[in-house]
Image (tube, rainbow, N blue to C red; front, top):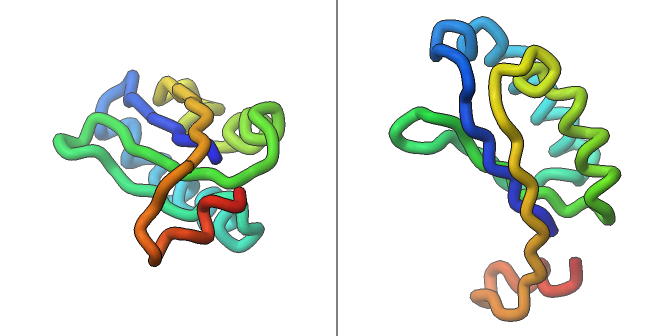
Length: 96
C-alpha cells in the first residue's frame, strides 16, 4: 500500500482549472481498484491518496497521468506503508 501526499505548488485558481480532469483521473483509478481513498488537506494545500498497487513503479506511472502532476501544479510524495494492524472494518488492508 502507498500513501501519496500532494502539495500544491501553484495557486488554487490554477488547481481549480484542472480539478475536473483530476477527478476523472481519480475515478478511473478507483474503477481499476488502484485507489481506495483520497481527499483534500485542510487547509486546502494539497491532498492524499491511498493506493493499493503492487509496486512504486506502477504507482509512479499512474501518477504521471494525473493532470496536477502533468501540469506541474503539485509535488507528489510517495510513501510505502505496510499495514500490520487495523480495525476489523479495515482488515482487508492486511492482505495488500
